[in-house]
Image (cartoon, rainbow, N blue to C red; front, side, top):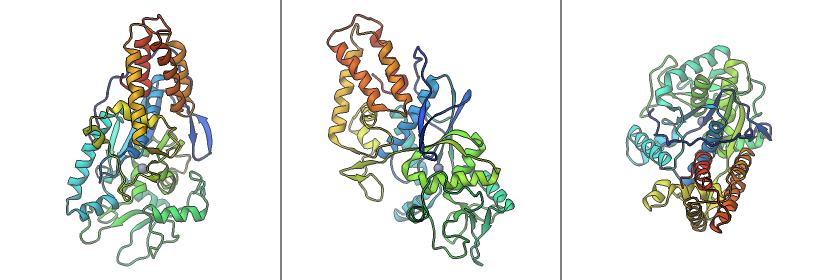
Amino acid sequence: MQTWRSVAVPRVPGTPPPLRLHDTATGQLRPTAPGPEAKMYVCGITPYDATHLGHAATYLAFDLVHRLWRDAGHDVHYVQNVTDIDEPLLERAERDHEDWVVLGRRETALFREDMEALRVLPPREFVGAVESIPEIVEMIGELLANGSAYRAEDPVHPDIYFDRSYTGRFGYESNYDEATMAGFFAERGGDPGRPGKRDPLDALLWRLARPGEPSRESELGAGRPGWHVQCSAIALNRLGLRFDVQGGGSDLVFPHHEYSAAHAEALTGDHPFAGHYVHAGMIGLAGEKMSKSKGNLVLVSRLRADDVDPSAMRLALFAGHYRTDRGWTDELLHQAQERLARWREATSAQAGPAAEGTIAKLRDRLADDLDTPSALGAVDAWVVDALEHRGTDTDAPASIRNAVDALLGVAL
Ligand code: ZN
């Protein structure tokens, strides 16, 4: 798929510390240790509705990972998918009497516009599930061949399922107990009650065509892929096993990331799928998680139409830590707009206090599991001094402006 346009990223002098991130699988804060090429896969949208601030918060968190790795001199191989064939998209198209392909294309185009406006650096590869069906079919064929996948005992629709007991490590990514797994599996797209499976928590790999449902011809029979195997194949085929970061919102911890990892590990006989499993918190509105089903969405495109500066959206979301579930309020946005105005005023002055210490602190705070609240605080401290004319360094305002642009993606 076509990705979106990148903005230029200024170089920042100095040496950044290694980036440490919280890993869900081990429950620890651990340094990322990429080679010359840093590899990241972040689960993309299911394009049936416009980008809301919950999505934006997730992609902005991983945009920081992208920027910090670039700052450290890595070539970043970033892959993101689009789940352009799955139940929620097909249901929405049906409800609105719309062609699912048209709906998916329109919402994907709007997502690109939103990401570009937010100055999110684009993935190197932006990959749709539909265009990846041949490689997904190949992966499922190999899983069938090695015995980690099987056909459901159903004479009419022998769909293909994944045997979750195959790797012997199932559950290591989420660390959830059986009851928690069962709850999330049922709640997040699983089919525990489907007859003909070996285990209620075995996940769908290939759904054979039903009348009126979209399908593709394949050696598995006409049908369409399950959700988790889409990301598993797309990531594995582009990044290989043991890529650096698998990312997404915290609602993907289980089942999505657990099965994506298990599929790839069953195929290769090796582990782990990713070095870090990194999850962003949810954004709420008036105490409730922002979600399509609740209808309480604040859309990035709506804010843009209201002339809200995307840099203010970034600062509002960065005012809280990426792993924390947090609320969106008008007050939060207002404070971010005021902060942005102060930063712009200070960095357009003729001189300011020396920038090096502030830039080192900014890097240090971001490298500590993307501690954006403290990172913004470091810039605030410089801004206060600059606005009180406590500095004569004529290079400093431009240095701070560059660092804030490169590391936070905020345009001053
Ligand atoms: Zn995914």
